[in-house]
Amino acid sequence: MDNSKEMSFIDHLEELRWNVIRSLIAVMTMACVCFIFKDFIFDVIIFGPKKLSFPTYKFLCNVATFVNIETNFCAEEFPFVIQNRTMAGQFSAHIWTSIIGGFIISFPYIIYELWKFISPGMHENERKKSRGFIFITSLLFFIGVLFGYYIVTPFSINFLGSYQVSKEVLNEIDLSSFIGLVRSSSLACGLVFELPIIMYFLTKVGLVTPEILIKYRKYALIMVLILAAVITPPDVASQVIVAIPILILYQISIYISRIVIKKDLNKN
Image (cartoon, rainbow, N blue to C red; front, side):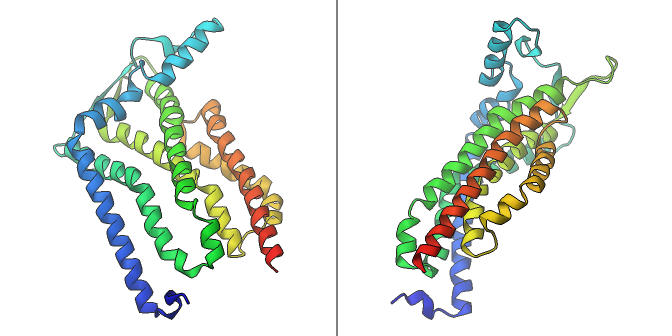
């Protein structure tokens, strides 16, 4: 017999509280590690997409050279500088970047704590079939973060950092603005790539069916384009690049929803 069924509402809240506390401890521990390795976090990771030696730019430069077209991906450097205008600006950037880094690194453990909280309420066979939950959820998240970092971020920096309304205006980008773009692009894509997992649980609780997902697919397309416009620079190429994987994930979500419904029907 599962003892979790005998737990009161207060007991569940207490258990959730400790899950949250342990997750926060993991995030802060990894944040401290990121804080210590400041040079690597900033010089290699954060400011990596600012350098035209970044892998994405080198690849696009090689492609442009191969097809014989001109591009600024083959230039020596971007026409902008990064500056700090506030006394605590660099320290604040260091703190918040460390916390975000701690969250990204700790994500598998956070999912593990979430799984520990919800798994007692599941049947034994459901727990066995869902053992890959932590791995799949973490994998999707990290793929999304890498997609945001290596695809969305470089295109955003290339477009926004090179854009000028006039030669009279120089691009002197504030430190918080640049780091915010890198962080938001990577983290947003990481969370967006969790769409199949979200649809799985929504199907399990009966809020979503394959028919609903198919019926509202055209509205989902509009929402995808809006989302792509929010997390990318205002050029069509970048928005299409982001929209394509999201649409693929939506189709995967329909397939997953069908599998869940089919298994539930077989049980009955």
